[in-house]
View 1 (cartoon, rainbow, N blue to C red):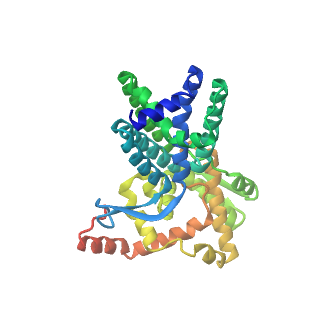
View 2 (tube, rainbow, N blue to C red):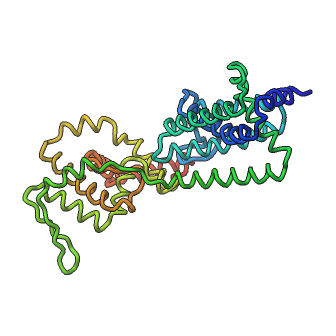
View 3 (tube, rainbow, N blue to C red):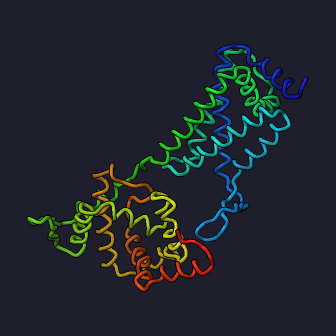
Length: 348
């Protein structure tokens, strides 16, 4: 008898009850998925390079995490068990990686989400063992953590039609969920901006051509009204500018906007900005704050228009915007494009 068959036979001894088996069919994948998610949060100092052309070179690099390492080591383990187990592990590893990346890109916390699923799935397994009336020893329970996916795969492989249908459902569900996660709107806390809004004494009066006239008692009042009117007229552009200034434009608009994000990091727009902002004249800081409060007030009233990775706006964004645009006025972005073209590197 193969080692895999012996392990599955031993696992079967503790999973005879149909209800317990059903519980494990649900909880085993959830435990494995949440374990990968927890390990995914542990970043390593290892940087892996892939020879793919990018705008800054011919290599795409990323930081390896413990979750990816776990998938790799588990794949080696399943290779020694059987080819079928390896194929199942590779399929699961791909699905788990897609979901982890998607959760990281969403407003959700990968750590909190994984920990919640992990605890609930283990609770489900304990309930299943209670129904069965038979629980493996602790040392076997640890070993069964690796055996249980193979047991599940073995049950599926015995019914090829069910296995194929399961693969299609899991694959489709994974990419459907990933798509929903990527477009999730963050739950933004605008309470601070809403609390500040009442202190501004300003009116926005539009003439017959729709041009706004801002009537404020102080410079800060006027800046607040100007921002709100600006948002009413061109909110989409404001959001794109904020993303560009923060070096996050590609995260929403796609790879074509990556050169901007590279440029933001190249000229170090945000390096030491907090300390430098604190040295500005208090009256100027008050105007910047008032403008951002106006933007945030409009954003809080139109949550359906919000893009990810922006809100709430901060006064530092206005200063960073000036740093971001000033070199472009002198053609620095064109010089960068020419220099990169001279080295055979594409900027788009």
